[in-house]
Image (cartoon, rainbow, N blue to C red):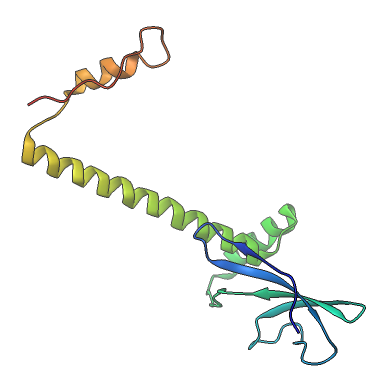
Length: 146
């Protein structure tokens, strides 16, 4: 048993699902079996195409009836499942908050560097530099000073 295998990785490099061709008559997991992670099984001439979910975490989410109705309505308009809509919303929220936290950490590091060295640009120096962007007179980043 065993055969060709391909995997899909998400943006974090984690395998979300994989496709596995297997030959044989016995031991092929059933679709939806919880212990195997098989979400679909297709057979062609004693070869079985298994779609396996890998690293997918099941969780429950309690939402009120009004929000549930809105999600279901949006899902039908987008020809997506409510599950997909909720996963996409959570993914976008997490990415946005991670970016916000990264910006905050970068700002704190800049503040710490300023406190240690005193090197900076004034607001006017930064504005003057930014005003050159996209013009023939575009300049490079000005040097920081004390």
